Length: 57
Length: 308
Image 1 (cartoon, one colour):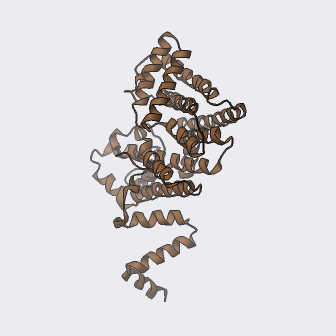
Image 2 (cartoon, helix red, strand yellow):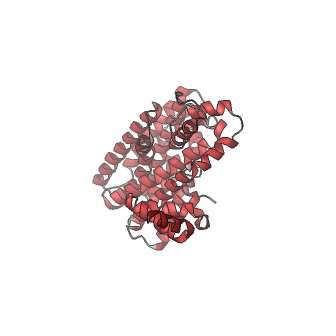
C-alpha cells in the first residue's frame, strides 16, 4: 500500500506537494517555514523576495 | 527618507562640533562622512518607528543621531578587532587614534540620547534598554572574536546577540520615545531582520571563496559550517582539519567543484529557505501590529526589500 502510494505521488506533482507538506506538518515545521520551503523549491514562484535583507549589507 | 537623513546628519554634525575639539572633531567628521555615504542607516529605523507609533516633533532626530553614533562606534571597533576593511578611513590612521574616536562616538551617542525627549522617564527607560542591548551585542562580539561557534545553533545564538541586538536597539529607540514602553513584537521582528541580514552577509562573503575574509580567518558562520560538513561527507578534505573549507580552497584554485557541491547538497537551497523564512516571519510579526498599508509598504521598500 505504501509503495503504491509513493509511486502515485511520484507520478503526480500536485500530490507530491501535499505529501511533502504532510511530512513537514508531522515534523512540526512551522507554516512560515513550509511556505519558504515550497516557494524556494518551485522556481516559477521565485520573486524579489529571494533577495531580501540586502539593505543591511 | 531623504529629508530624515538630512536632519539626522545635521544633528550629528552639530553634536560633533559641540563636544569634540580640534583633531578629534576633524577625524570624527571624516569618519562620519564615510559612514553616511553607505546605504544603510539605522537611525532611519528609529525615526520610522517613532512616527509609526504616533510620535511627533523633531527631537527624535537626536535619538536617531545617537543610534547612528552607537552603530558607527561598534563598526569601528569591529573593524579594528578583525583588522579588516582596510579601505575604511579609521583603518588608515594610527590605531590608538581610531580607538579614541570610536570611544568618543559611543559617549557622544549617550549625550544625544539624553537630549532626545523632555520626558525624563522615557529617557531613563531608553537609556536602560540601549545599554542592555549594546552589552548584549558586546557579549555576542566576544563570542565571535573567540570563534566560540561550534554548530548552527551556536551561530544563531551569537548572531542574535551580536547583530540582531543592534537592529532591535534602533527600532526600539523610536518605539520607547513614542510610547514610553517596550514592544516585544517589534523586538521580535527586528531580531528576524537582524538574523536574515547577517545570514545574507555571511553567505555572500563565503561565495567570494578565495577572497572570502571569513574563510581566511576561520570564522564559523552558518554557510561555512554547512559547506565544511558537506566537504567532509564527500571526503574532499580530511575530517581532522579545523578549517575544511580553507584547506579545500588552498588545494583547488578552480571553484567549479565547490559550487556544484553547494547546489547538489542543497546548501544553497537551505540558506535561501532560511532567508525567506526570516523574511516571512518578520513580515508576519510586523503585520500583527495592523499597520496602515502605506506604512507597511514603506517598511518593506526601505528596510527589507533589496536595493535597486
